[in-house]
Amino acid sequence: GMLLERGRIFEEAALFPPMVSLAESLLGPRMLLGQLLGQQTVRDGFRIGLHTDYVMIPAPFPEQPQLMTGIWAMEDFTVESGCTWVVPGSHKLRRPPQADDDLSAAIPLIMPKGSLGLWDGAIWHWQGERALDGPRVTLHSTYMRGALRTYDDYLAIDPEILDRNPPELRTLTGQDDVFGKNNYAGQRRAQPGGYATRLQPAMGVGGG
Image 1 (cartoon, rainbow, N blue to C red):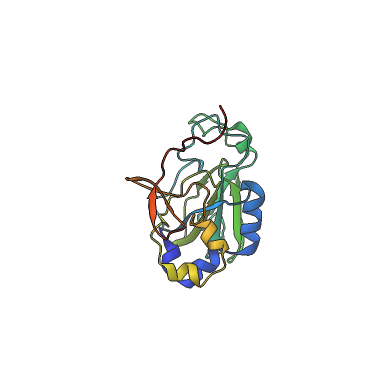
Image 2: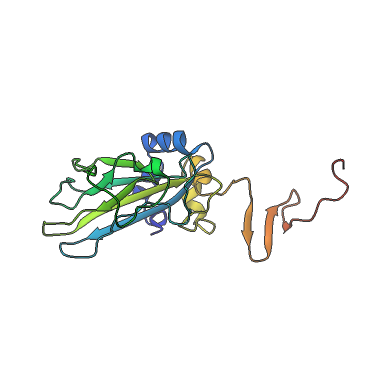
């Protein structure tokens, strides 16, 4: 996890224009980068079973997409290589899969090395069984609505990473979100005088 701090190539991946544009069309403006995660799987090793990416979202899922996942293929995605399988249209059921659900409509994501697979986080999917020697290496990019919380912690990210990239990365990492930054002491916002203070209750504001 936290690959955004591990090299410029991951910063470029987070800002990849086609993916960011599609994610914003699904999730709305001021979306967040939920996670940049690397994964390696080997033959006869652990693999991720049937699931959705709505880890903390209870059913029934909201009608609007909450997450978008992108998977970068570091090798050709084939059934033998252990590609991802998806159940088209399953996001419309607005719930996670159950043990007795019909998966006959599932399809493998067959794509050449260098491709990018994208799906609504509510889609049912799983990692196929690998029949080849050597590791299956993938990069997962997760984007989420701005009202959610990210899996990776960007509040203490190296400022140099933000300074050398377009301002969109500050938005993706929540540096300028509308809620401000929170810690165990309560909400803290930078003030015009150059310091931070706890948010105080408004008094005498508004009518009624």
